[in-house]
Image (cartoon, rainbow, N blue to C red; front, side):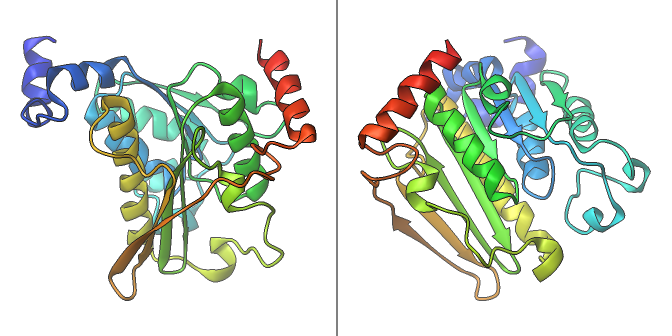
Length: 260
């Protein structure tokens, strides 16, 4: 590291769980963030500040005025601009060590493998189950850990999914019939900062090998009560994405050939 980097990351270097090897791992890391909104914003800013060398932000949306109550990575002057590019520019302005790219595309089952190939960790902060399922399937096929966060009203949750533990669809097999967006039920802005920052923390732990990631566990936060708890998750052998049935195994073989 250069003298400037040693000075910039001094507080990381003092941590025995990170130190020089961990910081160098962060500088070499490649991370993809799906969703540049309330969760992807704080996650991206903290990953950039931590010195993650390459981050790609994937989001098809434009900044709207109603976003600004919680998506603090944007200002009034960004309204109408592509979210992915606006967040990527903010990250690079925050830390020149971070090369941030933007993909202004909606991630779906048809392009997820292409968009997520080549990254060490994937973060998903989207509010669409269709997108979440596509991200999960791609991460399974690519063998990459998935850090998944979600918020609604006053509640947040966070987990790390992927082999050998349960995948996201072991936890959510199908989209709930009564699923509602933040636009429909509301969201307290500061909650997205809590969960988004925690997503960045999990990614830092995975890259550096520090501590124990939330693999196989789900962190639940109740903002109104100011309480949290962690529950264990089990792998579902009949999971449509990672299960052991003949149909699932054939899908895995087909997906692997597609990736190659």
